[in-house]
Amino acid sequence: MSEAYCPLCYAGLEVIEVAPCMECGHSPVELQHALFGQHRYAEMRIFGELTLILCDFCLVDFGSFNAELFGLPKNTRIGYEKMQFLRDIEDIYITKDKICPSCNYRLPFLSFIKKAQELHVKCLKEK
Image (tube, rainbow, N blue to C red; front, side):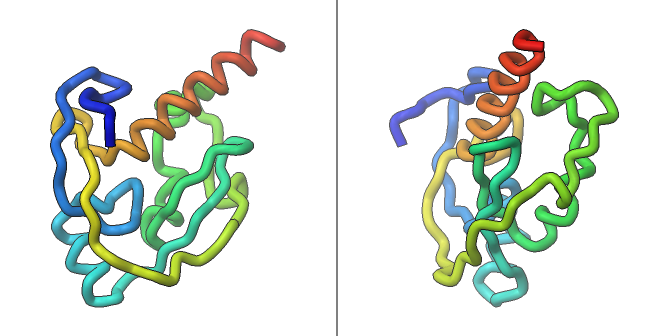
């Protein structure tokens, strides 16, 4: 946990308790869902070699993101059909991680966004 600043907006990061989902795991509601076993979690490959651990809700909802957030052209579909299942996350526990209070995401998700942007900019330049 050596990063001190958000890779997207450069705001200072805060350390809080989180559930396994890298997208919504910082949410107090998701923490409760994790503690009571209300969600399942899976590691998914998205955009080639990039991976995320997502809860079942975020997995289904992933396609609602604006594709431009990930460096893709507007209106690009990024739904479940573009993902590859890697494994179920069996050991569910609460841990500490960093979040950006400005972007309101965990550091792993922010890093995923930044890497996706870099990947897609590189791909667009190569075309």
